[in-house]
Image 1: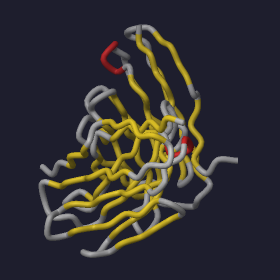
Image 2: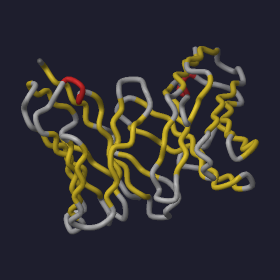
Image 3: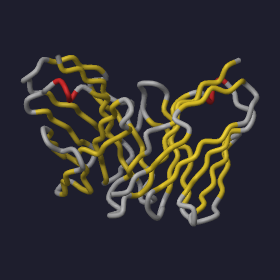
Image 4: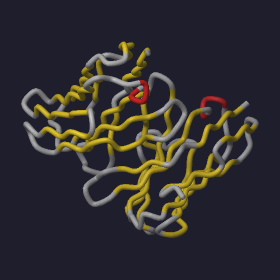
Length: 111
Length: 111
């Protein structure tokens, strides 16, 4: 079965610093989704990537998909306290019936 | 109002009790899902439904049942709750792009 591995598991950055979170799949990626979750709350959709080499940005968050490496990265520029939370990557399962998720990366931003 | 509403938000119950978690959505999507989230394990798919007459088991369906009462309503039942069903439960819907939209979650504790 397909698995998504996220790294790092957690990180603490100083406000204003840049950071990158990675998501690596054990199998070919057909669709990759990034979500943000505040502790104990629901998941908020951030971005969807479908094609190798695709890159999308929203405000200070940029996501890229490297299909050959079966990997996606999420980059945050000039982090702010509002960026703190748990970031999860999700991918279409092989049957195309649901999403599988990584275990998440917990981001803390110190001011 | 939220697009995906889960009730209750928090529930404490005793071992052996039957409990129902409810989910309703106003997005008009046919596809709905139930997941559970445990610390360190990410999200696991319990059941999914592609329309009112289509119900499918996910990876961890044992001990759970579901009912799709209408396009907008999808409920999850624990027939006889046990302590290891203590978790955060999420309902989600998905659009034609595969983007899933999540409710705020139900925190369930089984004593």
